[in-house]
Length: 473
Image (cartoon, rainbow, N blue to C red; front, side):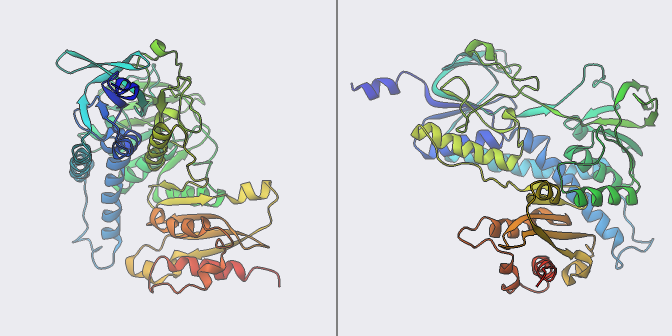
């Protein structure tokens, strides 16, 4: 027996992945395709992680249903009183459930097709090569591997002083179990999740109070985009309270009352607490391998997603920023390459696009006007308003705009910011141009390219012409 063969038989698997969300899936599939013996442990009965069951997929499915309802009710063909439709929150949950089932079936087939061992149970470390799996029936199984990857994701942050067991108090996971149709909801936390659910409930006709602990909505966005969202929320009837923090939450049988530090009180049918997330590391017994997560349960990794324990890696939400499903897939793929080759030169792209599924959507890539101004970069702005596009007029999606920021001298595109329906799709056209090398990143590309007509993509040509016309000759 060779030394290589002896090493192979030392462990049950080459790699064990804990978690089947985007990060775990990306790692497992890439390792399997590289010929590694891979096992995946998932604590839930079905694969997909928080992304498929409580986060990205269900919330976007809910949002889609509501946005279609809004389009239907605002379309001149259908918006007579006789035809106006109303849906309840439980109604749109059915659509989300159908999408989740399709996603779970698809993702389960990936593991079968790639001959990956899939185990269900709660994993915890015994040592840096060995884990224990606590199964639902109370039994335990022990597995070992050369490499272990933590891809356990995150969960909503729950302050201990709030009673989340009360029937009128929810977080972004449990809100999917809401059975009644609230006429008034308080959403505490105006981050991405809070703003998305504010759109959903307001679109269903509920009264929405949105409590923001900061001084503006989504402050990481370009200021004009943030202002556009604030105005749209205000115009739709959402009440936003900035710079507020809760003092206590009073729960009653028929309502919830939120007492603010400022002395204000707010009452509603229910409360959605959506202020922060925590990495799922508390049940992994990380002390057994000498790892200590930070105060939010996140793990520190190097550029190859390797933790301080050499054979233990971590990807996805459990390592914090950027906490995006799209990035987690890529992190898993990169980590798998690093595990296979010992080092990986691949990296996440610098400019990761953001997609925020409010109504209307928001998406951006690159730098904002505030960042460019602070860095003293000479730039100009090109704008296209959706209300001037034929496709938007046809579809009745005239709210919004596209903004291109480009260097005055080189005409290199520095940032793109889209506010409006299909923003998360539209952004990728500009992203593709921004990623071009050797002079390919140039705003004139959009002027010299013939677009299908009518399309939303035509906004790039309109914005490019608008911006170039601003340049001083």
